[in-house]
Length: 111
Length: 105
Image (cartoon, rainbow over all chains, first blue to last red; front, side, top):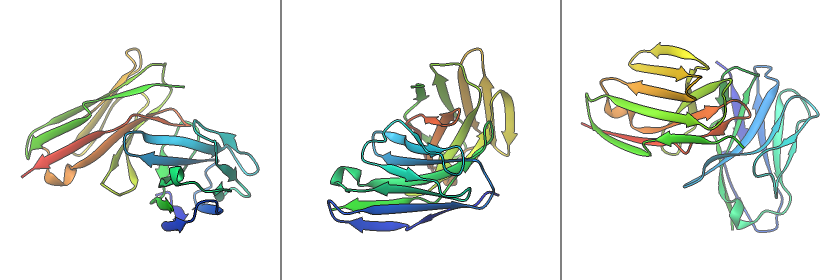
């Protein structure tokens, strides 16, 4: 079973502060994804990556940056956090035309 | 982007009843996946099913590519089946909004 680990699990941040959400996967998957989940919107894709050094914009990239320094790690960065970014964030990994595996999620509150 | 429509949005059953959940896609699909999510929990993959029918215990997934639809059938529902079921289309996945299932004892 693929292992996807997110940290932190919970985070409280102040408006205007910088937040970094981390994701680590141990199954050597090429593709990694960041989603946010909000009531009424379901899961929405923020950024994704096809391999180390690459990042792509998803459906709602504004206000977020991503970094893929290695095959295993994919970070989501909020340079200037805003209350509208309060949400639950999920990281996932997988390969093309194969199942996707999700982390446990990070609950972020921006005050 | 790709559009994924799930139905019904919510479903309430008595334990032992069957459930049928549907996903319809606006574009041709290459792969799709069904997930289960408990309230406040992560997503667990139930089926990766780009075409045809797959079974896992009381669960059956059927994907018909030409008709751009996929279904998830839960037989003899149990209270532990309660939660949200989501379908998603080819990565980077486009998700439906989910179907909330409540099974009462």
